[in-house]
Image 1 (cartoon, rainbow, N blue to C red):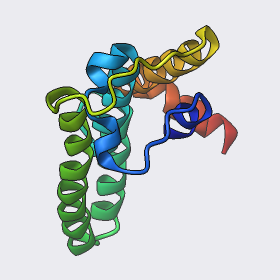
Image 2: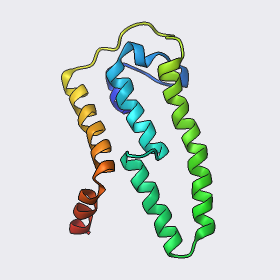
Image 3: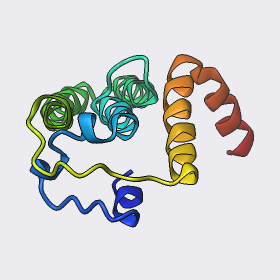
Length: 134
């Protein structure tokens, strides 16, 4: 997501560069919100399914201590991911210029966001695909 934004000239070297993104480019901000929430492991997004799968595997092999460590680090990581969302939506705009995106870029990001949502709601399709490949 950040690489795609960089391609259109939106350089984000610091967290403050995302300030007001929700006002400057609402659709990009919403797609970024989906990605951040997914990485934080918030249901019903695919990141939640991934984290549950990892925790389930750790518990199955009797590595409960490692599962606890993973949960602790997930909570710490969630703080940082959700902080990006806070900056995008709740902080004043530092760079007021609007971000212009091509239709192809918005389409690619929209497909990505849709897959993150749909694979979180219907994870069985992802499992079927991965079992057929591996």
